[in-house]
Image (cartoon, rainbow, N blue to C red):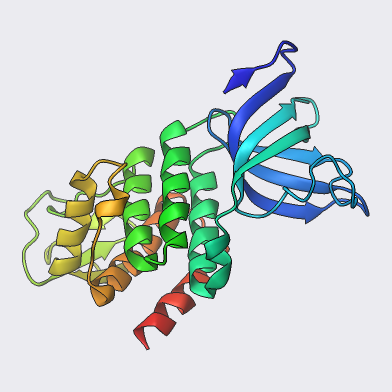
Length: 259
């Protein structure tokens, strides 16, 4: 983040998460900024043909934003946005677009306004690049694992979340209530549970050991990557206690790939 001479203005690297019509000439834009988390800004005149934004206010675009901070209203004023990357290849695949919108939404959940998370911003930026390259499931699995790590919600899949016993067997029972696996003695019919294969657990543990900048090196068999993404999507929803709006479209996209 860079402060301009006027302290009311902030310049920051930012990714456009949402764009909503505000009037016939303007948008309200939700931005994930690198240093300030999510910020909402009014882009006055952005819908005009000869706007100063020149068509750069587009969904899932990365650039540098200049923002006039208006703390009393919570709706700031976006005075400039200089595009650096449009990720145009995302538009060629519906599944890649869905995955990108999901990633952007949960990254925003982990970066509340005023609580910048540079590592999460960088993770999302790299993930959008990977998704644009077409490796949807593997790129998304890497993103999900490292989002959980950076947010402090990464579960220990090797031991029971209730009693600490070592988890063994080909299938691991994961309790969303306990935010971790449960052994046979601690499992309950009242728990909201799912199962995950030992192979998928190994994938998650391997991804967690990689540095956050290592997404480009990830290679996961397609079926295993889909299982991993599906499980981690549930774990993220449970961690943030909210079902992302893009979760169901993401699950449909994963099902299409399986078919």
